[in-house]
Length: 170
View 1 (spheres, helix red, strand yellow):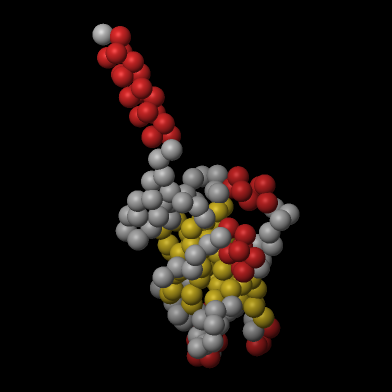
View 2 (tube, helix red, strand yellow):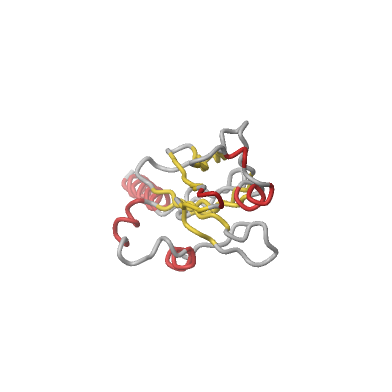
């Protein structure tokens, strides 16, 4: 009986150790939800019928942080240049176009606002600022953001990628 009890204690402690050290790298629907930080690319066109908004599903804790970058060269064949939003662009005829975003634990909404009717933009302006826009969403745990606020420049996409050792999305 004494040996059985000893084996039982070892099995329970071993099970606790294995569970506490479990690194669940399960990928569901192409998303690794247990590893932070995570990057996801979103491409879309802002239209009046969509209220000039793109929505992307995410799954983060309420305390975590979302960073959104716009590919400044998204309509160009050259390499990506990522620019943190919110961002204001000053267009012809004193127009101001703003990229901004809101998020909660389940989604990110990226949207444009302007001091003019966006449907009146020229074709060239729509192609540059509204059509086929690519954004990179970066999910970062808030605890690391608070600890590193002075160590990483979040406006510099490359600095964020290097600091968090991020892998480019496929």
